[in-house]
Amino acid sequence: MKAILAGNWKMNKVADEASLLISELKEGLSGMPEGVDVVVSPAFPFLASAIIQCDRSRLSVAAQNCHYEDHGAFTGEVSVPMLKSIGVTYCIVGHSERRQYYAETDESVGLKMKALITEGITPIYCCGEQEAERRSEKQFEVVERQLDKALSVLSENEKEQIVVAYEPVWAIGTGLTATAEQAQEMHAFIRKQLGPVGDTVPILYGGSCKPSNADEIFACSDVNGGLIGGASLNAGDFLSLLNSLHKYKGTK
Ligand code: PGA
Image (tube, rainbow, N blue to C red; front, top):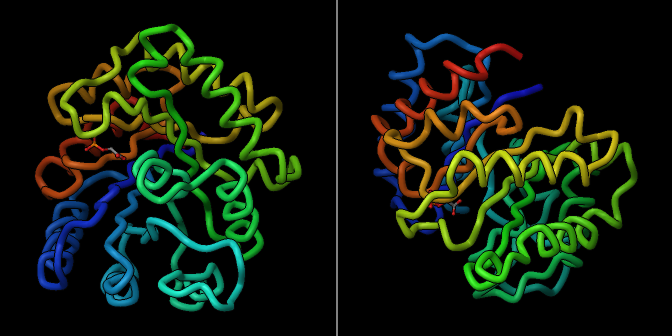
């Protein structure tokens, strides 16, 4: 099973800062063993230059969103063929911040994933329950519904090409992390929901994952990596997370 450490940079880093962070990561990575895919996600204006900068390095570049139509009158949007044309290889979709602030739904996220897979870009599909849903023990129901809706437009063959990120909303940017037990339990549940493709689809954990708690999360048998927000903005922290992940999941 592939192990992935993906940084979700969100709306952070201007041009110089993005390029500096990539340089620092490239330098840090040069001495590290392989076996984990490492992904960065600068904002749209810097994707093309990031891809050039990451050429012949271990770093892959992700977009943080896309539209599901190829082109047309969608002011402010970016299509999958546009991302493909500059060499983007991953795209985060369905992040809870996009669901909350931009009314993204599992239906539109499903269409985005289909468009991405058609162009050979790997979708990183985010799902996870809100705090109130966890408190009322609805987390499995919620995640099951999210997966069912978003994946319903994909064929088995297409499903095989996605990455899932479990991100409990109450843990994102809050400093609260799921315990290792909560993460393992949900990852195992998601794997079961995925059916046969669950054997190969990587499932990442996201939500206040940082060097101090990474070991216990990455040690979980059904956690195949991380989608990292805050701690991906600092090269030292991100490389430290990579070290942790490597310790537990370094062989493919
Ligand atoms: P966080 O964000 O690591 O800052 O909690 C994770 C995410 O939103 O992907």
